[in-house]
Length: 145
Image 1 (cartoon, rainbow, N blue to C red):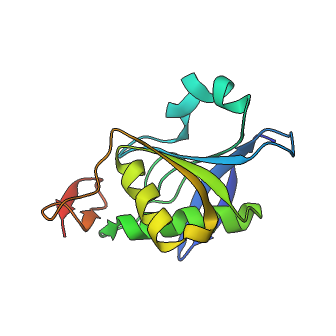
Image 2: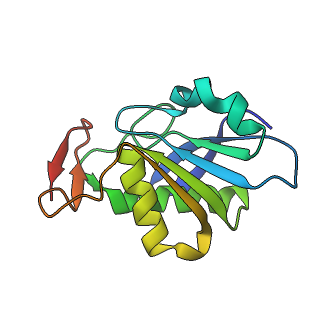
């Protein structure tokens, strides 16, 4: 199960792919940090694929996902993950987020706990009063909201 697919999140197309065919294995969504696309997960895919079916996605503005003019929030990005899960027909999944992807994963778990089986956060932050809500400009630069 490889190859780029697209989910619709509002006006944007979000690129993703599914890997793994063992139906008994749980799903794991991999969410990259700022400026990285799904190819950044390549070094760990073999090991993760031994235990999980994988959902790899390109965040909005990266890889094959559409670029947006204007700013967007971590909550918007969490909505993109829901759009991918819906398009793939996945009701629940474990979620691994790195850096900004960890902030997205936390937002997803808070706003849609029924969709998240487990949460793994790598080198991320909960935001803090000066950093949350985090806005991203169309150039990928972050600003405090």
